[in-house]
Length: 154
Image 1 (cartoon, one colour):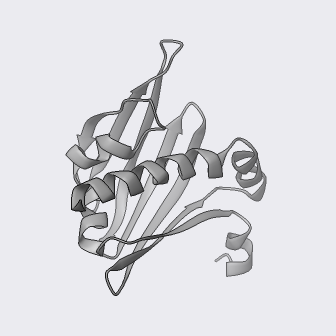
Image 2: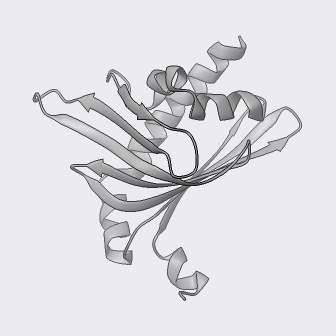
């Protein structure tokens, strides 16, 4: 079994605090009609093809690219602890494959402390993904999530 120090070299993490109750943030992550509002970068549209939100359930989203190709996001849910944690495999074709996503939702007062971590198969792959724009890409999506959450409670 790998030690935590080895795993830590393969993880990229984004943390945010949303001034929104955890129940609302959880719903934005778990309901297809909400996912389509924020999952893609600004200006892009996403289609939810499959969303079986249960352990062992599959998810698959597509996004048309400007060049006519399709960006595919898909995975299988490995762990769901309502409303605290989601663990899923993930492939983001053609850019990223074979990663594990951990999403944590921690409630403090009426705020949600949100932690999004991606575990990569190797340290080298992790560094490559970081250089390819991991923080900008996901940061943009989470900015959209924040805006969408404000609209939900507004």
